[in-house]
Length: 491
Image (tube, rainbow, N blue to C red; front, side, top):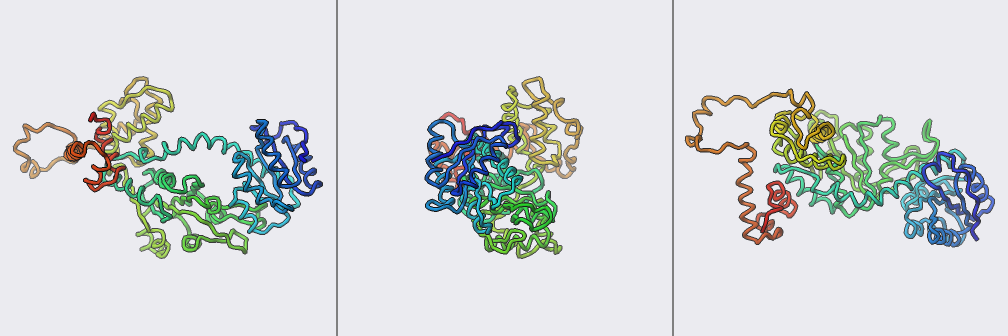
């Protein structure tokens, strides 16, 4: 039988943003009633169940009544159906309910199993009030995120699809091929490139196009976390492992179990951390800080560096064995200044995205504004271009972005190409007078466009047959068609 407690006053932070309905599942009535009394005072609407069967019945009844539980607080050790079995049922049949496990046994194996099976947290008896309070607050935030994720999941394919990695430069086309090739596997990927070149977007795209897309994607910047805390962030810790470790903490590797972990700025890892990472990459196992038991994980690892690891290895600042371990598939992302021909495509992409967000009608840039962007060295790469376009979309009062809408430092960059030498003039084409002027990038791309058009027509616009004939994959073909305006061609 389920014992329903009366709703408390919803004036505590834990229940501030949600109608927090909580089910306590414990075979000890004294423990269950004590927890219910405390949590009522915290502002939760509480029900109790004294075994697994009662709990599943209560969950089903609540769903049918349109008053589903947000949270469940479940004892691990119960007669009949165990807490772990209850957790599995909830994860399968009540996916919006966030579960926190409680047990008298504080072994790390139980904590790992609970987290692996979907528990949001893990507490040991006797439960400390403040730890329970914080755990449920985190669980409520997670429950809110689950609701948001139902909406966002449908947007992931759009956001991290290959169509959002914009560029017709041959190096970017090679990147699209690599993403498609490596995504289905567990292979470790190393990306190199300056800050702002899109390494995080590439990592997301690999995950989103992999069989792990429905599992966690966890990102951490190794350079932004103090060395003393990085080990705990990556591998977690047990209560009492160091000053301030008041409770067990799940690290990023375990949080990414079954999914993908993206380690950005791996070049900043200390020698000691490099050694620990080497073992994890080799064995997929580690010990949380302060623990003696080993945790095993199934995780795909993607890494990124904004410095040359080859140079760091040569200087003795990066482990050679770790470099060989992570350099399985390498993706080099060129700075935007080296592919300035992609700036018009990227600018168009960002104008469309930012204008849509701001509900404005912006058709493009003036020739002068585009020329200013292409003259600018763009030290912040793609990220900086996105910010420049966002600013322009905010400021402009016209349907077309003009020079005056760009930041002053972009417009002030008047650098031009170096003068042509006399020898180069002497070797100029005698038919120059009859040549129709056009940008060099456009002139170089026109022959490729004609080849694509002929191949598409020869194959009756069958993309797969055309890609096979040209020895490229369908994604690369589509990218080129889109870049050259052939995707909307009448055929």
